[in-house]
Every structure is written in structure tokens, then in C-alpha cells.
Amino acid sequence: MTKKVKDEILHDHNKDGVDRRGFLKCMAWAGTGALCVMQGGVLKSYSLSRLSDLGANAAAAGELSFVQISDSHMGFNKPANPDVAGTLKAAVDKINALPKAPEFLLHTGDISHLSKPEEFDTVDQILKATGKEVFFVPGEHDVLNDDGAQFRERYGKGAKGAGWYSFEKKGVHFIGLVNVMNLKAGGLGTLGHEQLEWLEDDVKHLKSSTPIVVFAHIPLWTVYPEWGWGTDDSAQALAYLKKFGSVTVLNGHIHQTMQKVEGNVTFHTAASTAFPQPQPGKADSPGPMKVPAEQLRSILGITDVNYVRGQQALAVVDSSLA
Amino acid sequence: MRRRVWILVLAAPIVLAAAQLVRDSRGFTASAAQAPTSGAEVKIDNFSFGPTALTVAAGTTVTWTNRDDIPHTVVSEDKVFKSKVLDTDEKFSFMFTKPGTYGYFCSVHPKMTGKVVVQ
Image (cartoon, rainbow over all chains, first blue to last red; front, top):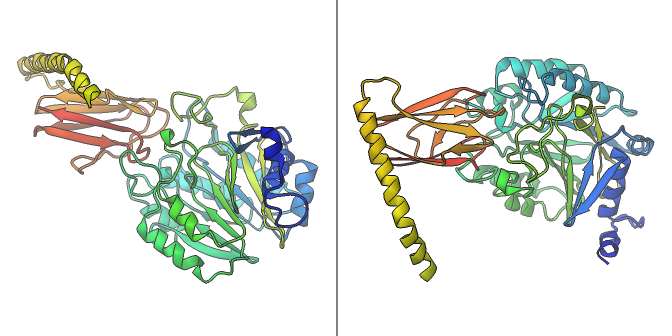
């Protein structure tokens, strides 16, 4: 009974017999080729294998494809991954081997581990090998000690406030948000009043048919508040995006892939390129998870996102570094 | 309401015992006042401060040690003290001179909270 309800087509925007949930379910299966679990109404996909042929065909058909990478944690050198530069390079190789070259990259934060200049330098150097423009938002590890001054100096020129901004690519409106600053004791991620006001103004003039991609470090949906995996004022941000038919939210921070669909909003978190973290509540803390060395690259990864004009949902395909 | 009263009654002996302990340790600290190492410790393990609540005498230096694989900070809610980011095994110390309750948190992982009660 439960299964039947979940397989019903709820929002068939494209009149193709597939709703967003079903589409994502397909893509999750296609991209990861292995394990996809519906749990408590939340679809989780686990990156276990290579980008499949189906994923490659989907990318070839689109007008715009880009890659999301996240949580490089350059400078981390603990047993969970003593070579984070090596795994970031593996991610770059993966990107360069995609059947269709992405237009650009998004990095959803925790570029560095300790906000050290040499850590940022190393990441910049490694990512150069893609030859692509990279758009960044900061993670909490990128704004240590200086309230993000260095991050803004490097990556936030022309950005507003703590480093938020928006841009257009082939008719898709991208919004980079910052939710790792001025965190309050006991709280979650925070966008803050100034940024929310900017967001409201930024999207006001856009047609409701404009596809929206929001990217920020900490999830903009409540994944697991006990571990701080959520953003206190994300509901207000999403309220400003209600009028849009297609909203895709891309986050990092939790070092594992997860997807959720709520109305016209698809939420997705990317894997880390550095080390995995446990599933919510499955360990004493969200600290780095040590896995056997031969398994590490199978749970690190990149996310390939493909936009096909006229389709409501963007195809989000995770692939591992293995 | 009734339940709350009971908890208070049950908790009272514990509080008294704790107060006694603090008095004892204070006596000890006083007698060892010349030793430069006198102080109290808070360990950071598994994204939590231990002990979560620490009671010390005024004049005590508290030292936090990060034993996680992930960096943390120690930041007073009332901006009384603020550490730089502490990588694995790094420490931060602060001497509490005035009595009071000092709530603090990790500004990187704000779910991590603790307090120091200075008597």
C-alpha cells in the first residue's frame, strides 16, 4: 500500500508520464547504478558506481550541464583520508572524462580545512586542470578566524554581503547563498535578514518559468538538526522561490548524497571529494568516517547536473571517484 | 507542576554534594596556588564538550583540548572569550576571574555548547 502511493505520479509537469519524484528516482538509479532507498518519504541515493550510459545520454541531450563538487577539505590529513589532494585530482579526472564537458563548476564549500592560504592555493591549482570557471560559496571551514575576509578576497569579488551572488547561464538563474556566518549557540546554519532581503529582491523580476538553481554549503532543508544539518531561516528563503516551477537546491556539508522533493523544489546534497561522514544518527558524532582504503573512492564523488529546456526538473547525477 | 517539584527535591542532595566537591577542590587549589599548573580541563571529543558544565573557583584557568579529527572553536556567548580555531590536539586557555555563569559554544558547529560556572 505504502509503496503504491509512493509510485503514483504526483506532478506530471512535462506530460511524459513521469513526475519529478519518479524522474529523480530514475536518475538516482541511473547515476549511481546501485542503491536507492525510499525512507520516510525521503529518497536517498548512494553513489556506488560509474556514470552509466543512461546518465551519459541524458547529459548529451541537455542545453546546459555543469558539475557540483564539494567539501575538498584541503589540509585534512587524518586517517579517514591522508591524501585529499589525490582524491580532488581524481574528481578532476572524472570531470575531464565526462562524455559532455560541463559549462562550469560549482563548489559548495569547505574548499579548505583550516582556511589557510596554501590550502586554497592547492585547490585552485588542482581545479585549473578542468579549464572551467568555478563558482564558490563558503563552508564553515573557509571562514575560520577572519569572518570570511580571505574567502571574499579570493572568490567573492563582486558578491554582496558575506559573499552571496547570482548569475544567469542559458536561461537558468543561479543563486549562491552563504549560511555559515554568524552562527548562534545551539543553532543551525543561518542566512540572516540582509541576505534574505537581497534574495527576495533578486528573484522578484524573474518570470516564474525561469529555472532556479540555489547552491549553499549547509543543507537548506532539515536533514538532521541534532548534528546541525539544516538552516534555521531556510523556510523564508524558499518562500521567496515559491512562484517558480523548477527550483533545484544543491548543498554539501554532510559528505554524502541525499535527495528530497518538496513541491517544485528538489533538494540534493553532494558527496565530498575528501572523506565520508556517517548517515544521520548512525554514529556518536558527524566526524570523518574511516572506511577501508580500497572503498574510499567509491563513496567520494562529483555531481553532474543537466538542464534540458522545457523540462521542469534538472537531472542530477552523482558519480563516485572509483 | 508536581513533577517539577519532585525533581527539585531529588536534585537538591546532588547539588549539595556537588557544592561540597567544589569546596573541596577549591581548598586543594588554594593550597596548591603556587603551582603554575593549577586549573581545570575541558576535553572536546565527538563534537561535544566534556564536562558540558564545569564549576570552578574564581581565578581558575580552564584549558580546552580538541581531541577530534575536525577543528573546533571555544567562543563565549557573551563575547567574554574567543579562541582561534583549534585543530586536533590544540589547546585554548582562559582564566576566569569574576564569578558568574559563562555559556560558550563552537562557532563552527554551534550545536556544541557548554558552560563554566565560576564561584
